[in-house]
Image 1: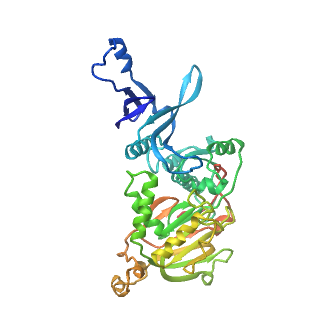
Image 2 (image 1 turned 120 degrees about the horizontal axis):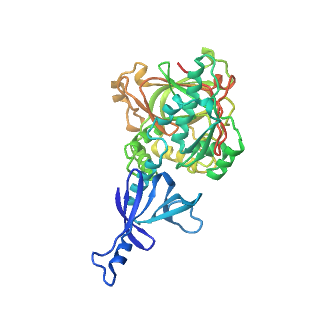
Length: 440
């Protein structure tokens, strides 16, 4: 990429490659009153190697006490520099008041600074790595990176044991140092997003057991994770993923507004096994109906947008999870429900919202239970009309902030994972998670 930024008080031509960032002062073609040597000094190039950059942030102008928002000022690159044998922290300030220009550079830099090369890279590394040579794994990143590593550690343990009927714990603890936009796992486990606190927890070896769950479809494992959202949460994420060129906050806002504008319920069969129930057929509870949103979470899912958590009644390691089912309602009532998450309580006080403590959940979309698409034509006004998918059409799921498309019934489990063995992970505040899950 190439662009114009102010460095200090002068405008510079800034060039970004895969390995370095360079900046050169912009001077007139024939600066008056300057010698040839002075002109050469003015045009001298400076650079920072990306291997020395450890963070990048968008700079904003904020009033006293303002916690978010504010006019964009540019970028700050945090990097190390050598003084003899010592490494010192330094910051490069790139000033540009254009929000679009700044966010475009920010997103590109974030991608280049990612330690893993691509989505799924961490999983492939963990599958091949000799784990007995290490004492633990540390993840510096957001919820997507954390989720991928947790899945990789637990999956590797099951593959190594080759015993799906007797799940085993992960071989190594996972330390999480938060560096994302929301850091839900870090906030839920330790209550803060402070990277220094996180690093100290890792160094001191503090451990926290945290429940995970398995997501399977057609008797095949899909993923191990902490949370899943179907309906509104899945569809809004699918829309956001199509706007990756936007900043994360703008992309999220756009997707929420668009999904609310086209709000439709999903018609599905929802079955769940109450927590601490024996897994007999008669113990399962089943409902058929229209749902705007179905969420299943094994951790509270705290974030800046939901300070009390999306599932505030969930604990970290009790072997169960929260099922939050939001039935069909008007758009205005659903928005009121969503807004309650930013306050301390009241999000579950609506008559169309039900919550349960569960150990397993099964969700079967309408297209898989033999109902025809033509039936929807007689259903009346649009707010009551479910989205009818063609047979085997993949539906979007939001699993730990990652878009997963699944065409069939989904089974989510905890209970039996919880009492036989747990997989630990060091958290951000790293504390540890441990889980076991079924692998086909």
